[in-house]
Length: 252
Image (tube, rainbow, N blue to C red; front, side):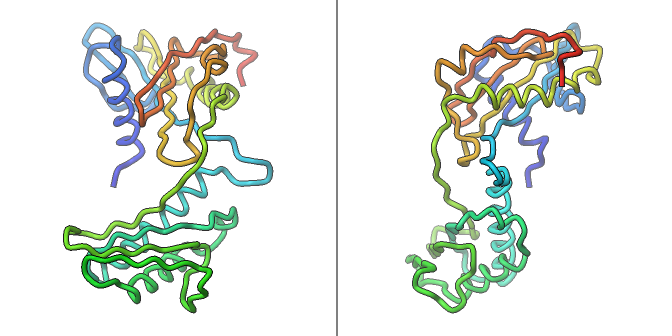
């Protein structure tokens, strides 16, 4: 399973591939900042972080709900694999209510696994089940389950399909991300000649769907970093943020 640092390194390599003036040198994992690029004569510290849509009033962060649904699906897959059933591809369509963060997720995973194992389709076919048909054992918090069984599968794969809209103006969210990182720069490696901040929009789920418009691109941000960037990971599109260094007593 990939760690948070693996994910950060993946995005840093993506950025290196598209940014022609990426500093030369070997990339070393670090903590403060996340990485140091060292060519023997010059070090550049790079912090990699993610951006998500701001939650609506009185609702939990969208990415927290998405993460909970994925963990439920992953554990259900693990349970099914331990039962030695044929390899399946299972799509779980959640009713993403905020209170899914407060339920016993392991219990829901077992209910999902029980339902899947009891409804394995014939070879090279698939079946879709929806909650509106009132199946007695249908798991709560799930709108529909599609189970596919195909000879080409070598292992099971449980997924959580999602859909959403792309936020086009997000300068406020960008500044909020920068504000979280600005105070930490005083603890960074003093050997670095420059410190960069790379803000990633993964685009893999609705909470991270961003599509930049001109207003966001022209905004000016308060950043203590020498250079700050935004990159949409799916398309690898990026731009360098316009920034100025605020006096320290203005920093949050």
